[in-house]
Image (cartoon, rainbow, N blue to C red):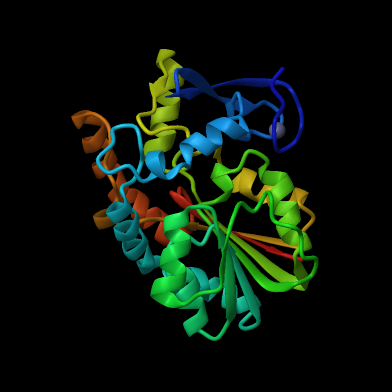
Length: 295
Ligand SMILES: [Zn+2]
């Protein structure tokens, strides 16, 4: 029986994407009750270890791995264009104090927050990330998983998780833990991709459902959860925050990564321009979401 990790109901239907990893198939399911999309079965601890091992995660030029070490850093630098907007939102609610980042990668955002006056620290799973944080920026970063971190109740003013929640097997439990670690009126900010909320993603989903086809994803199953504005709001509310804010964001057309067939790339490129305008002007169809929970 498949249980929704967000609302614990057991009625689901197939969502038209699948993954394959380590000779195993993973089917995306959509909860019929709360619409949350998640991979089934959930990955085991051993599968996660393999998926995030340096040999796999950072294997240069691998077909199966997602990143090489240099790509990982290039992506970190490229991603810094969004820092002013994201930190700007956080600063509206909590302009100073103790700032903790879960999954701080190579430390670029943490360093940016430090420069803007926060007392920063973080936790990162990948050894390469931890090393870069410490050696390049001299940041206070622990190595490990947030799941295994001993909770520190009421310790921080701000906790940030960028591109983390979609990777977690127990996203609600971990968000609840993050909430427990901020002070009263503290802020937990989450940034996640939302590929099925964009015009392209919506068209693809409707088309595949209409024709009864499924898309087999080429990347390994790093994303075990897919958020929409509705389900991101739901998980923040369920974690017990007093106030919730969802901001829809979009990558500029120059920054999108095109994957898939020539036809898919063309459709994506053509739809991205009107999509960009709609997200910027009306705050809809964003391909990235920033969720803010206030304790
Ligand atoms: Zn559900």
